[in-house]
Length: 381
Image 1 (tube, rainbow, N blue to C red):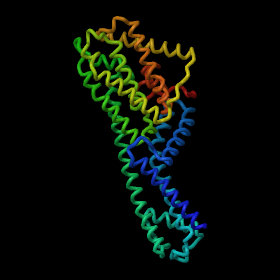
Image 2: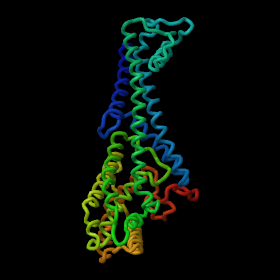
Image 3: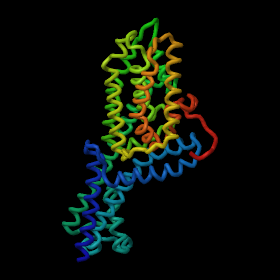
Image 4: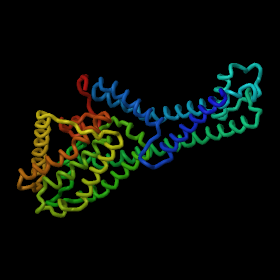
C-alpha cells in the first residue's frame, strides 16, 4: 500500500509538471499552467505590495527586477517538482533494488532524493545505481526528462527576450516623435510641414499590426506581463495610451474638411479599433475586467482633466499652423466619450503593472512622462 501511495504521488507530480510545461511553453493558446501562474501572480502581488511603499523611481527599479527572476524561479520549481516526483517513485524500492556504495548509504528518503537529483542533471556519480530493470528504465526516463526540461527552458527564455525586444521597438516608434513623452499634439505636429501632413499614416499603418504582434507575444508568453521597464515609454500602458489618444485627436481635433486624407483615412479607425481590442484582451487575460465605480467628485475631476488636455491639444495644434475643428463643443463631447470608453480599463492595467496614471499620460507634466521617470519625493502611493 505504501508503495502504491508513494508511486502515485510521484506520478501526479510529474503529470502536473508535464501539463504546466505544455500549457506555458508549448501551447499557443491564451492560458498558462498552474505552477507558472501561481508563481507569477504570487511574486508580482508581493512585489507590488513592497513597491507601493517606495518612491516613483525606486518603485520602478524594484519591479524591474521581478520579471527576470521569474524565469529562473520557474525552472527551479520545475526541477524541484520533477526531482521530488521521481524520488517518490524510487523511495519504496531504495536499497532493495539499488546498488549502493556502503560509505554513501543513508536514509532511504535522502538517497531517493539524491539519486533523483543526480539523474535529472545527468551527473551520475555512480555511488548509487539501479539494478532492477524497472528502476533502470525509470532512471533513463528521468535523465531524458532533465535534458528536455533544460532545453525547453532555454528555448522559452530566448523567445521571451525576443518578444521583449519587439515590444521596445514598437515603443520607440512613437517615443521620439511625441516630445519624448506622451504629447500626442507634438507627435501630430511633427508630421505637418508646409500646410500638409507627411508620413503620419505611414507611422499609423504598421502600428496596428505591431499592436496585434504584442498581443500574440503576451498570449504565448504571459510572463512578459511581469517584465516592468524602468523607462515608462517602454511600458505597455504608454504604448496603448499613445495609440488610442493619437487616433482620438486625429478624428476629433483636426478639421476634417481641411485634411480629409488624414482625418478620414481608414488606417486611423483601424488603429483605434485595434488598440481597444488589444486593451480588452489584456484586461481580460489579467482578470482586471471589474468596472470601477466613480463617485461624482471623481467623475468631475476626470472631466476637468480631459477638458484641460483637449484644450491644450487644440492650442498646440494651432501653434503649429494646423487647422482644428471649428465646432469645439462637439469635438469636446466626442473626445470625452472616447476617453470614457477606454481610460478606465487602461488605468486599471497601468496600476496593475505598477505605473502611476500621470506618468503614463503626462497629465502631471512631461517631467513624469519622459523616459527615465524622474524621482519624486519619498511618499507612499
